[in-house]
Length: 428
Image (tube, rainbow, N blue to C red; front, side, top):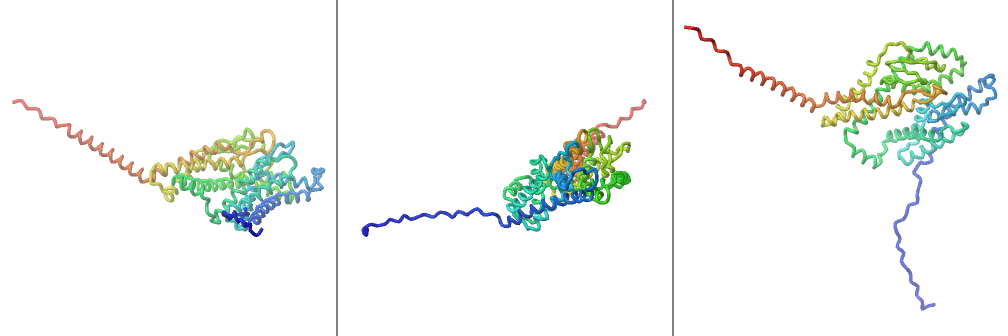
């Protein structure tokens, strides 16, 4: 044993592998997403249950319980997240109260800002907490309530709010996004920014149109409200419900501004050129809709999006100037195309059904809104961009000078070719 030698083989140690770790503050981010979903749900369900408690002795409620009231409130809340709720004999309701969607987005944004989320990986946990909480709370509604659509709606709402929060926190952009941004031409980036400016201007005009309609139709709104006789608590709930649908009606006003208009039931049309109406549900807020027989104002109304496009063209010329005239014109085309896509998304979000039969068609047509916004904004933006561009000025100046020179040369040639007539000789 003593004569035996032991051979020791050296071990080559490679680079140490890092154990997978969760991002910092992942738990706080997840709780922020869960908190946003629960608070937005309570903001809708609590008034619904309170209304049931206040009217529990009403004969119309029958054997309904507070859990039924909670299910109704949850169904209304899910509508704001993309659900289509089956309400039995009343058909399927899928018209989204975009006010509820905005409240959820604001809560997600506020939670992300309070949690000081500055990394996309951490924000992903907040988004997951929000989406899973929305899906979990949707179980309160019996039967299928469009769960895949709810997941997509919650993903869009939470994702948009978190992107805005990360942008406000000055989070470094991903490398892929930076490469894509650098690879895209300047006129593309300028056009996309101009589209957001145009959308903000058009939505401001739509809010103004809705305010004018509310002032002019306030008498009808009050008459419909008194006919319902909802009581004090019912009045509060009715007002909150109508406020939730006001952003939806802002999109309707946008569709009215650009010309195609919108429908509240199959066979109806509310547009600046024509109003075709039919019996409507007794919602007081529908009293602000235009009445038939008014003066057609299509020519004047569609001029407003053209003017917004012209303002965007002037902004692009001053803030995002392009050296070539064709690049400048293309920036206006990109702005119009991007605005058309955004308008179509808003129109699709503000469309749906509120009952069976003809009430299954409510809201604007997304393709019609997109087409109208595209040509109106492009007309205003491209004309202004071309009119202000120095290359176009130089080309017009050269052309006008060439025309003047040609006219002058023609006059000179005509004067030189016509010799004076010699006087006739007098007879001797």
